Amino acid sequence: MSDAERSYEKSAELFGSSFLAREVPTRDFPSAGMTATDALRLVAEDLALEGLPARNLATFVTTWMEPEAQKLIAFNLHRNFIDHAEYPRTAELEQRCIRMLADLFHAPVETTGARTQGSSEAIMLGALSLKWNWRQRRRDAGLPTDNPNLVFGGDVHVVWEKFCRYFDVEPRIVPLQRGKYTIGPEDVEPHIDENTIGVAAVLGTTFTGHKDDIGGINDLLVRIKKERKLDVPLHVDGASGAFVWPFLYPHSEWDFRLEQVRSINTSGHKFGLVYPGIGWLIFRTKEDLNPDLVFKENYLGKTDSTFTLNFSTGSAMVVAQYYNFVRYGRPGYTYIMENMQRNAEVLADKLEKMGDFRVIGREFEQLPLVAFRLTEGHSYDEFDVAWQLSAERGWMVPAYTMPPDAQDVKIMRALVKQTLSREQVDTLARDIEDACRTLEKKGGAHESERKKMVVGSGH
Ligand SMILES: *Cc1c(COP(=O)(O)O)cnc(C)c1O
Image (cartoon, rainbow, N blue to C red; front, side, top):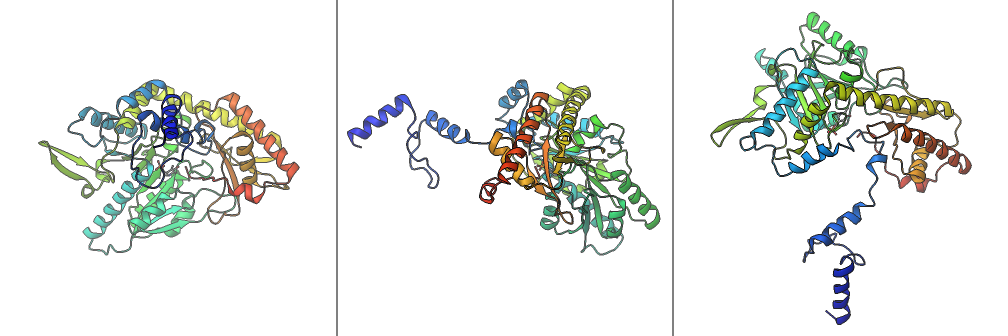
């Protein structure tokens, strides 16, 4: 090292970090380390360029928790959730959450469920149980088991197709139509046969926030059971909706009050108001979980049973979920959901008044979000608006096209979460209007500008 280099290093040590004016390690496994302070600054400076979660109206996932909850999370980062024998209290908190959710979803008897990494893992496990139960029924009746199928609409999350591909089940997907973005019994009926392991219906789609006609599909399945002796279970994907409907629409029946609903998944990290990653799978009764999927192991002299795809994971989010349940209870969740809904309505009103947009499906039960499209006759499209809004004011509001057969429909969607206050809603509406006026003047965003922006729809 030259004298000049040595002197630079000394200054860096005193006044800054050794990476302020140097490239950071990105490819090779570092051949030397650095001080903890340098590492902290290096990573923090990198992340300073990240999008602001408070302006991310694309995500359904929680971006804010109370300071007390954050404290609990920080205190529990060092515990592995799967070590039930060593951490029996954490395991007990999981069981309490499962019992509380079963109660919230009107399970008829004491039942069972699982804590998962999110709805995706919960759906994989729930759908596996559907497949295992179907195979059991077929085997018991001496019938072939080589051709299972699962029926769902084009409005589901990608995880349902993923399940079908990973676990060898034929997906029978009901296409959407222009102006009809959920499915009902008439769509499902033609696809059901003796090889149907189940029907999946969505409570709160990622596309427009509406629910499939779960009541109608249930009635259809009840009729099929009576007339054709086919007992086809219904799984409700309540990733978002299962934490919204019980509080905003308590009298709307979509859960275990309906006879054919056998399992429900939900994301604790969406409207369960916990940071990512936690999800839940709840069965109607213990019998709906196929016992062959549960692994029993003898560990430290105790028998432990697990029903998961993952194994080791943090326990902090289970603790945080239980915190929210006891902290908020029904009145707290109701208060929070109603505020979000109220602010979503204000935003929808303002967008309609602007004259540039049409709001989609406000008259129906819906997640606290606003899904909207441009009215006819604009020189720019929804993707332009999303880009301009992000460029001008940093709001992340995604634009996307609907799934087949409604793929020519473009939509924008703004989640109205706990932290989007009334004041922010007013500002957002003004910013959307400003973005439209800018686009009018310049006649749309340039292709090259738009490509820079990555927007997703399904989270
Ligand atoms: C978010 C979502 C999923 C996936 O849930 P994760 O918790 O992100 O794994 C599945 N289905 C629906 C309807 C969703 O909204």
